[in-house]
Length: 497
Ligand SMILES: Cc1cc2nc3c(=O)[nH]c(=O)nc-3n(C[C@H](O)[C@H](O)[C@H](O)COP(=O)(O)OP(=O)(O)OC[C@H]3O[C@@H](n4cnc5c(N)ncnc54)[C@H](O)[C@@H]3O)c2cc1C
Image (cartoon, rainbow, N blue to C red; front, top):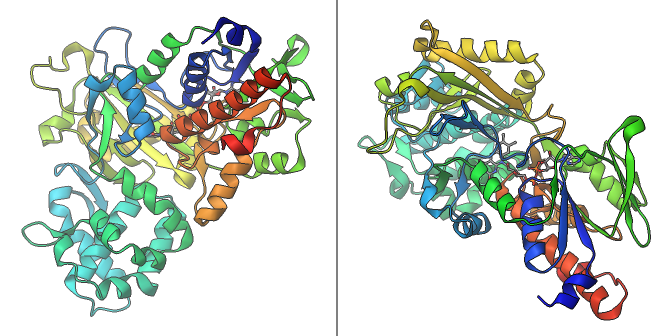
């Protein structure tokens, strides 16, 4: 990058030090821009949040935000590689993969290995017709298990209606033999079946259909985790950024003027207004809509108001010992049902690694989304933790042993001041409507650009944050480059997008 080019460029002010803000800042600097980041909270990473129970090396940790990466998310995988984290990649064992994990059924919790008979009986009992082939009912049983485990209540009820209405009738006409699994052919590769017969998806209600990709991804075997914690992605990116990253700088107002963007920082009498040359805003729209916004056009204000967020709540427990390993659970997750919904176990120690010892072990006791997340998220923190521990103890009575629980923590992202939501959802909309919202969310206002998972085609994933950051960098580069060449700032957005 030539000296002249670097000097001619102004500073890009990035609002938010989550994955979108950090990736954008890193890439902008690589292109020769000066960058500063304003982060409202006192920590980096936003919704990538690894909680460590202790400051010592090897302290057990849980992921209170993002915890796994689909290997198909090439941009995220690429950064993992480029940031030197390739040797930390491990398979992420997900729901319905660990045979000794538990599954909530009408007859109480059963081990996954014993679950098929019960799941099949449950679905059969709920159907009006009793003449479906066994394999059709096996499909219904496992799809219901996946949806029950992951989806919020409305989608769970919706699936029952879909099964009764048309879904099973369509599946009844398909040869399921290639997709059946297990000695008794009482399991089914739901992913393979949907891939081979994509048309059956149209028998799912539109909201469920929109969520199905996420459900299938979350239960796919093609997921990885970082053995050192997802926060290392954040730390390594931040370490490569030369410009300042200011923490505790809450942006409370944004005014777009012809030749600058004015940012109001802080609240009350101590608030200051600062002009900025070019700004990239990565804060969730759920936060942005609470700010004083001036100089935005009507459509932009509408989309800022309209983007829908799905809450998520996680509660984690630090325990004296990994008692689940005595039950043969070596990672993966239980579908716990009740209020706590999903429980994720840490991967069993790698060969040669010391056992938990004094450090204890960490368990993601509860992961909920949608209305389930609201129920827990709106409880006072102590009550929420109590409720989760009580329910978890019904599934794992070892938790009640004296001295077993050392600590509890969690985040209700729907109530969290820097997110005010969990992640963007576009369920129930077709591909064209999703793309239209992405373009509206991303469209700049003068010198103000936008990124974040809500501005992407992969909302609710790190991949979306990264995708949006790279698109925004191209747009800023186009604008700054054009200004550099012509001395003016023509609108370059269409070309960049
Ligand atoms: C519970 C949960 C589980 C998830 N699981 C996964 C997963 O397994 N895999 C996956 O890939 N993705 C997962 N995601 C999604 C992923 O975490 C997000 O898509 C991604 O981290 C979003 O990055 P971002 O930069 O767009 O937003 P954020 O990470 O939210 O970053 C925005 C930043 O802006 C800051 N900010 C907010 N308001 C202000 C303000 N007024 N002034 C200044 N700064 C402000 C915030 O503090 C934050 O640091 C999960 C998310 C949640 C909540």
